[in-house]
Amino acid sequence: MEVTLAATTGRPQGSSASRRLRREGMVPAVVYANDLEPIPVAVNHRELSNALRTEAGSNVIIALDLEGGDTYTTLIREIKRHAYKPRIDHVDFVRISLTDTVSAEVQIDFVGEPVGVRESGGIVETMNTSVSIEALPTLIPSSIELNIEDLDIGDTITVASLPAIEGVEIMSELDMPLASVSLPAAVLAADEEGEEGEEGEEGVEGEEGEEAANGDESADSE
Image (cartoon, helix red, strand yellow):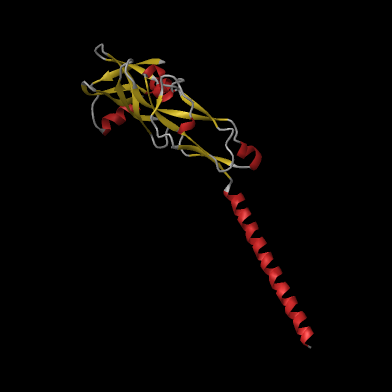
């Protein structure tokens, strides 16, 4: 999917100028390309936010219409957001060719309820929620589904279990963990306390047995 955004060029540099742009509803940005010097631009915040809400998410292909008539086909390489406000503070665009592969981060959608959760009360722990890929810009998936229904207590699923997608090469290490199923800490603590209690009871029973035996020996000696 491709979205067109108008980009103003020649924006003033500096923190105060960037703050003024944000107050005006614009987002300071920079366009990078191998054959060009970085180009400072500004794009409309609302239009950029709408572009990021498409199915492609942050991997949406953006045609930047620059003042002066040039149009660059780009991908977003970095988004800086405000610490607590729903605001995009800065964006880095990179110029691409639709016929050359590019690198991207793709979100993983975990599908299904693991057997360890259903039958043993376990919990799912996610270690990594995205993977690095290489693909043509038009073939970058919006996300990759990964079925985790077969995970039991103690199981871990890795990048190697991701489904193959035509035209997409997974670049992350195959043994990189994505999710696992484990028992909640409270359950583990209760189990440990139960084991300690059983050991204590065995110790008491042993002592009582020894005392009884000693008492019998004393009676015999008398």
